[in-house]
Image 1 (cartoon, rainbow, N blue to C red):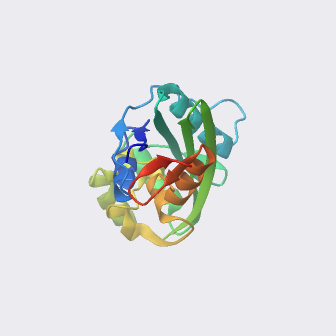
Image 2 (image 1 turned 90 degrees about the horizontal axis):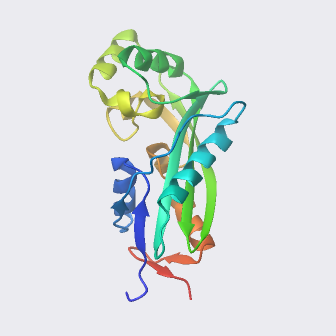
Length: 198
């Protein structure tokens, strides 16, 4: 344990914190305060990866590994962010109803003066949604702080018909991709512990 590495999460997302805890990596949460505006002409994947890298860089500190992430929902080439209000949440859900969309989660790892990053994509298909179902789901409040206006790990699970890819990517942190990025910066995941590779 002498060479165990401290983990910092550059995000206030309780789901990302839960996922790190799921694989035995307790973390300190230091949300990154960055401008998340999309640049003119910026492609969705490039946008998500840039934000993840900027979050990790903003919080980077010696002796710790910092994890930054950003999740976006894309349909017809358009990014669906967090809805501004219940009306916009309902509009997003109507758009997703009965269709497939992509969830892209970018992850960046900052450690030892380096930042590495990657994007994991999962395809999600929704059931056809009736108007009363949309209204009832929006009334729970769950869609209001979620990209694409739904949470797959909550009530929104019943809206999903199937997924093609990594479930944890849809939750906001692809764990397999995270472990691969940690290895790139010389850190080994040892099932509940993170240590400097020998």
